[in-house]
Image 1 (cartoon, helix red, strand yellow):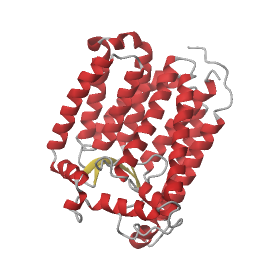
Image 2 (image 1 turned 90 degrees about the horizontal axis):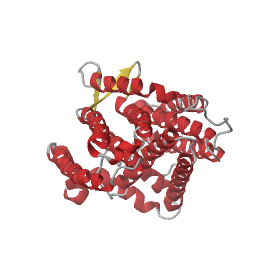
Image 3 (image 1 turned 60 degrees about the vertical axis):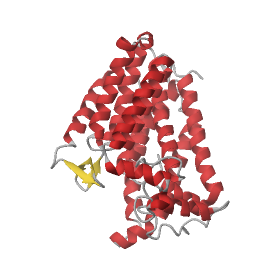
Amino acid sequence: MFPLPAKRSPDFLLVLLILSLLAFGLIMVYSASAVWADYKFGDSFYFVKRQLLFALIGVMAMFFLMNIDYWTWRSWGKLILIFCFLLLVLVLIPGIGTVRNGSRSWIGVGAFSVQPSEFMKLAMILFLAKYLAENQKKMTFFAKGLLPTLLLVMSAFGLIMLQPDLGTGTVMVATCVLMIFVSGARIIHFLLLGMAGIAGFVLLILSAPYRIQRITAFLDPWQDPLGNGFQIIQSLFAIGPGGLFGLGLGQSRQKFFYLPEPQTDFIFAIVAEELGFIGASFALLLFALLLWRGIRTAINAPDLYGSFLAVGIIAMIAIQVMINIGVVIGLIPVTGITLPFFSYGGSSLTLTLMAAGILLNISRHAKI
């Protein structure tokens, strides 16, 4: 086994940033969901209690994984990936997979549900980090280096698209492509694949009428203000009045049944409305600092495997943040991507905290 440097304390600033984002997110989940939760369930704390439960589970998992040498996952990565592939197949079976908002993406576990596609993102990172560390020299060759990794990634993407869940699939593919790029793959290969990817993405959009409607709503939401353009219009109506300092915590107007389910994908709009430009900028600053510490951990990891693993984890979080906020402020079409640490959702929050635990363990061995 690779002789890892002696363990030290984890990156304290990284721990502080993760817990700060989590606490910020819990406060905003309550603020954004209280009205809807009280109306639907007669309990204004309904969503935040469930989110707090998953936060506790996730934090325990984070500290547990923080104390397990990340090299352990080098041996288990393949089995974890196979298990997640199995879950992606099972979720497509009627009676096992649960349909929500038109997507069969969840498997019910008692009163809760698990979204396998979320865990596939981490499984792919674990496996790909090992593959890239062992085959870095091959990555400059298309047939024996780049192609096998892309076939694996696109197989997982294909299963996720059968649900369908374009948002999660896009995050997974983008994360893997960034890892492959960092490994030293040739830019010309990426340019050619990028052209093919754009063509494939266009075909995916054209193959589903609701995706075309989302693109249309993105280009001109006022063309259908009560239909496909409704969500983005209400999001912008939340952000605009927030101004510099916001309306005040808990004082959002859009959460009063204007912005649909504001505690999920569009929670950042409530942050901007209640806390204004300053509050929203503070949230972005926390994410930027998290990205910085993650990159620092990747650069100073003791081996290639640790570097690729850290790159994959921090890329996954950063890509989700950029897509989610891009959607909320109207820069890109609606995709259904959660905002890490903020959006309500047990699978997403637990997965993010588990990944953070692995990143923290890498920081314990970093050469700094």
